[in-house]
Image (cartoon, rainbow, N blue to C red; front, side, top):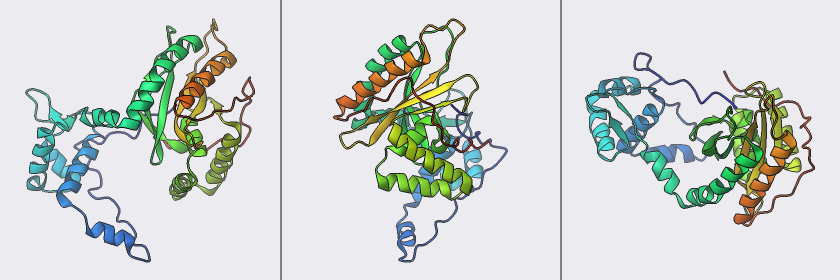
Length: 302
């Protein structure tokens, strides 16, 4: 488990006002796509992405400053976003913050709703059987995003909030998702990670991803927090590709109620049951799960 994303920017510490320009390919494709940009839409998306990084509301003038734009440029965009419910202000305050509207829209998307409707009842019963928390994550470009979570019935437990985002390369969920992606998606993600990752880290990551595709699960202890063992199983479609991953951050207690092996078995059965609802097949591994003996994957960026 990991830190929940990069630290939020503040109004007193402006971020870079513009994203790096995309390199133009030999056939000019990238340049052609940029030539068809929609300035007003780009400004609106910039505002949404900026507010998603803030821990408190910021005013229109602060938004303009952080985006490197004039107040006149952002005024109408901000007003439109507020009118449509994407951003909002608390009563008596001038600072804007991101509303839950995007989250609501994402969960109305039919495949996501179908996944959550199918998975949540199974996750609730499994959390009781395993006496552990469970969450489901999907691939979000170079990261994973938690889209469903159920708490452990134990008095003490560990959980990730819905919406949490972490690098795919340095999480159990992310590496397993990569292992079961269609080749084109897996190759693209690995190529993008390789742009900034050291060569030795990439060799370790690729080897581990290949191993996970053979084992059908990921298990790793102490990757994010000491004392927690992350166990992940994929949720596969009819083509054998991962729609999502079911992960258990196993936290033992001094009075162990359910062993790691028993909890992992219950978790696997849950992943298999969800997979079957999507016409997929999950091959049962040998229990107790053997540690993955490949070199540890890249460390999470600090």
